[in-house]
Amino acid sequence: MAEILAIANQKGGVGKTTTAVNLAAALAGMQQRVLLIDLDPQGNATMASGVLKNDLEITVTDVMVSESSIEEAILQTNVGYDLLPANMDLSGLDLTLASIEHREFILRSGLNQIKSKYDYILIDCAPSLNLLTVNALCATGGVIIPMQCEYYALEGLADLSGTIQTLKQLNLRLHIRGVLRTLYDPRSTLTRDVSEELESHFGDKLFKTVISRNIRLAEAPSHGLPVRLYDPASKGALQYDELAREILQTSA
Image (cartoon, rainbow, N blue to C red; front, side, top):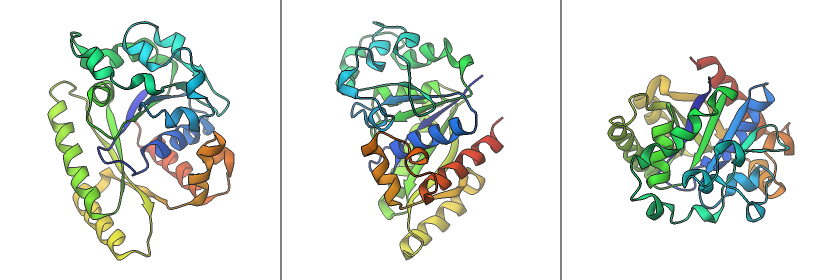
């Protein structure tokens, strides 16, 4: 049965999509059956997986409004994992779903139909607490929180931690699977100070793996590839492989 993990942070620009795509690829490269769900209207995870978002006939939007089954919407990619893609059709979906009963559990209901086919299901969330993110948090067991080691990131992390505590009323299994330090620059005093504060606060909930600033990670999406396929010897590829191993070792 799949472990379902949401990649979430209410602050933008912290590496959520980079983590979702590259962790999916790293796990797939370790012989895991992986589904990546793009739940962001920007569709960046879709594009970074080598899929043209504007050419799609069926997306996660169709699943959320019950116009397509989840099996019909899932694509097999050329990068090692399956994908439930997204594009701008997701924009404004909150209004469409507002009057639907049990709207927080639409994604969970869909995943119940296919989760036995996968070892890991990763959900790339938008940088906001909207109904799509609530669906992700109600469908998952654990949340991976990528964050940059800077002052304002700590404020966003506190907001998300509070959201997770609130949503436990809807999903008793919801918990922080791990906090991931991204865009890490060990030369920065602030980076080191925030990292130490995270270690003190989160303890073993803080992944040992850190993701450094790496030009190959930035370049890979423009080629429609995860970094381990774009440049497998790069620091970014090796670090996401390390993160995948850490997650495999700590899975129930």
